[in-house]
Image (spheres, rainbow, N blue to C red):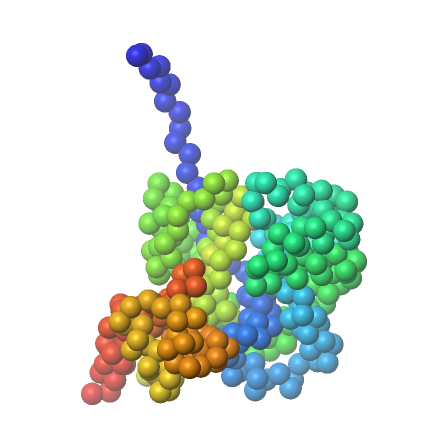
Length: 346
């Protein structure tokens, strides 16, 4: 059989590191309003100690964000707008046609549900939001998020977004660390202004310090967004054609010599509990589900989930499809981190 082949340019994903104060503000709002995991965030203690200085209007706006998970919409909009300042975000938001606004905010599910997603964005009727929300019924928050999009008007959502961003920025930019953060994030972006586009998968892992990305159908752009406010977590989101990875900024940018890293502190706190040590001991023997651990430890799922989230934040364990396993690499490296820190003073 004869085969005619005409070589064409090889297509690959577009990869970029994107950072701005707007991203940091949005991720701060997302972290602050994530009540279930907030105790594991690096900045939680600071948020608690400083929250008395928040204006009452900001506190109220954050309560709405927490209830509705509208932080997700802020991420989707900033991905669309790539605004460089809070005022720029507000200006561009006012220029988005209402159909485009809802298409940006509505989460992508799959190819089969795309017609309904687009119809909901175009017609933005309550019953369509309810119908589309049903496809996310098993998701942690997207079902309720889509439902609430249909119960707030376009103007109410825009006002909430603009007011929350503006007030959070005014509050957080008064913190003494803010200038250091923005300079470090700007340096991180400039450091990766030139990326090896021929090896995007390897570059993603190198830049983020370990994210392993498997290409997905229809995704042509991958954005890597460094952050401080969402540390130590990696946040992963996607649109119909773009993958977003929010990765923690390297801690050496943020601490002075002689100051222990949050990773070191977090690790020792995670190990300073009898139940967490027992959980880690069992997981080193082999992977377990939450249900299996509930039976083995005679402890409620709520309690175990809380303790496991602390171990996961310290990177001592992983979870994939509901199965927990020990991160042997991090466990082995942890004692070395302590020796490295203490060695400065020996």
